[in-house]
Length: 313
Image 1 (spheres, one colour):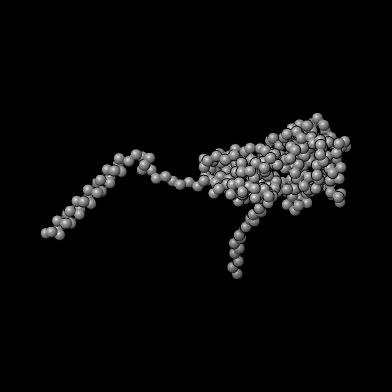
Image 2 (spheres, one colour; image 1 turned 180 degrees about the vertical axis):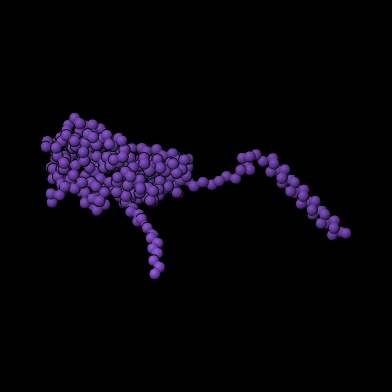
């Protein structure tokens, strides 16, 4: 009898507890009842990345596709000439940067001392500094000798026009030719590649110095319009070989002024910067590089499996 009473008591207590818990749950707000879903940091939020103007088309193409994949991500592209952008980066002011070279050891150490973050440099494509002129100019190539003999001279026989001083193109040219710029040299720079193209319509014998990515995407109506007024020159080397900035010539290092495009990331954890970098190096990202008519840094092999059936005898 006592055992029966104990069982009944336990059942009553259990029912009372369930009823009480249910009542508490009903009193909770919807916000309290909702279990928060933990999201990966690269899937939402805002990022302002900085790029040398030479690479703005490629950077924007990556960003547009990344934002389609992650609609809650907003990526803004900020253009800045390479030397200033790199300085801002190793001062810890920029989380993601697209330029033509990684940091030096001294710059890496400075960044680490300031932020305690080990930055990551990821090569993603091959690009080039190219020479352009008016389509009305009869020349089709320019020699390395002519470039060296005229680039920083006070009375040059050829007028060279940069997009920016201290830009990726400026650095590529000086690094490849091992040139040091004399003090008080007059450097003609228009400020943008578009203004260089406009200038060449006025001085039809001048030669502009811009990045290949500015004119590489032949399917872009804006680029098609540019190519109605300017042409890309081949570069003649010391063996009198005229070399064009084609993808095979970039891939094999034959074109004299080829360069790598790097993404430099200074970010804690796997945020938007890391997600963007990973996407740029992925197969889809490298297809965007191909679509921009640049040379992908990573070559993906296409595997085809053939099922061959032996005919029955």
